[in-house]
Every structure is written in C-alpha cells, then in structure tokens.
Amino acid sequence: MFYRQTVEGTASKSTLMRFAVGILSYVINYVACGFLAPVLLLTLVAIVFSYTAIIRPETPFIQNFAPVLQTNPGKTIRLNGDDIMRGIGYVTTALFLLSLIGNETRRFF
Image 1 (cartoon, rainbow, N blue to C red):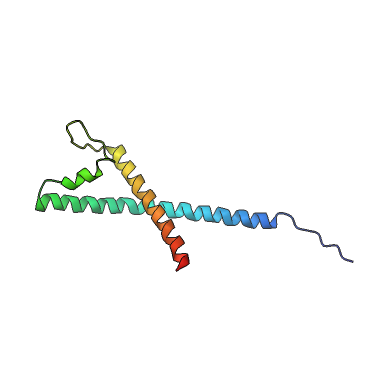
Image 2 (cartoon, rainbow, N blue to C red; image 1 turned 180 degrees about the vertical axis):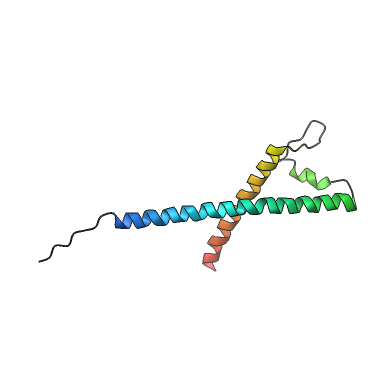
C-alpha cells in the first residue's frame, strides 16, 4: 500500500494567481483608458474651437455641462488645471466602465 502525500495550497495559489492576473488586467485597461481620455478631450476641444472660430462665437451648448463645471455669480465659467484633471478622470472612468460592460456583453453574443 502506497501512501500519497497530499499537496496543500496548490489550488489556492492558482486561484490567487488568477485573481492577481485579473486585477492586473483591469489596471492595464484603466491605464489604457487614461491614455485615450486626453486624446478624446483634445479632439473635443478642437471641434469646439473650430465651431466657435468658423460658425459663431456663442457656445450655448456649454450650459449643458453646467452641473459639472463651476460657474461664477456672473454665469461665466472658469476652468483651471484641477477642473481639467477632474474632467480627464471622469472620462477615463467612463471609458473604463464602458470597456468592462462591452467585454461582459461580448461573452453573451
């Protein structure tokens, strides 16, 4: 009769490794969305600039972003570096969540 020694912890190590790789893939995906967000925002800025320079200088559609932007009592909008970085963070997080939703729905179809 042979006695087979049980190996403990191999299943938990592979589960831990799968978990670590999954977390790392999410981090890489978030960083990739972080590189994409400024490109999209710069494209939006170029479109708004060309719209205001060529068609008309009024920008009534900016008021749609009023809940996100800080407005002064005179109803003017001032952006500083913190506001821009917060906007990039919002766009990055939105792109990341959309990519997660897209990956999950791709599994069903």
